[in-house]
Image (cartoon, rainbow, N blue to C red; front, side):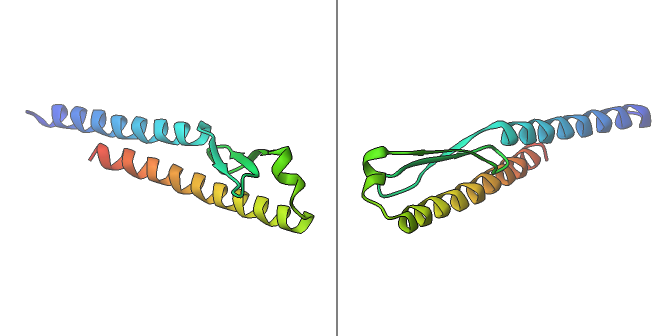
Amino acid sequence: MNSEEKLYHLAKEIDARVAAVEQAAKTGESLPLVLDIGAGLGTVTVDGMGGLVSVDLARDAVAGQTGASLAGHVLRAITNAESTATTRRKNMLDDAAREIR
């Protein structure tokens, strides 16, 4: 294999790596994450970047909570969902980079 062929194959390999990481990033950004709030209160949904999309509360379970208690549960769930989405996206990017090595 001559130098030009080696460079061509190296460029193709780099292109494949870049494409795989870009695809993982796109998937990680668009994949929503739904997590349980706990105590039967409902769920929180964040986007792939960890941005809050929605909080869905179970009407019957919420009735038995004080405002402070409900706020604490929801805030913990949102924080956990944001962190989990960020970690999941990072892991997807790391996996994509590893697969093409």
